Image (cartoon, rainbow, N blue to C red):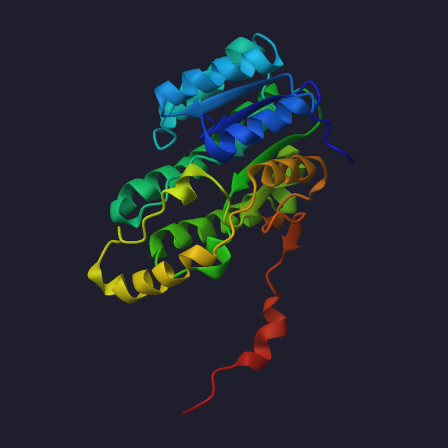
Length: 274
């Protein structure tokens, strides 16, 4: 069954710039009725709301200043969505920062914020205010959650946790109860302000200096993929992907599904030695 985006309403965290804004544009191009940009950057948020309304029509976009790490603010973003557009059908948990030097804030925004979205969406807003039989939550992870690079240990750990959240909340039992598909998109290195401003020197301890040097030596070889490709693949995933599935988009190529091996298949990898 195809999830029809046309006429639906989406809430995107971290939607004022970067990939979040590009997701909003692509969804509106595909017939989305309206999008709410939930972001803590007031200046960028208002500018993006204005630009989207100029491009796609007045009243199609709304900015709501939101710190996703604060449950009440995230809930207010949902309430504003319902107040203005009556419904909410899609949640994209996209808000995030990448800076292990402020790891407590990184955990609060990237992981706690993601959990807030899942709980609010699954237990109340997407369950109650959607327009059709099904709703969708997309958690934005990263290939960093799969490769787990040593120069960003906290960030990578959080992104791996988001993959775990998707598998757990997206399991068949939750879907049968809620009819909400929970999906995960894990982009590779993408041409966003976050990647452009990445400074591997800002790490949480000198212990990681070797990892810092290794990354500095290879950074120029990293090819940043286009935002357009990631956004276009997001739309396909929303339409067709199965709940609980993990999708990687990298090197400007179509999304492919990532699957963990079954535990039983790994029993021959037992530790050797006395």
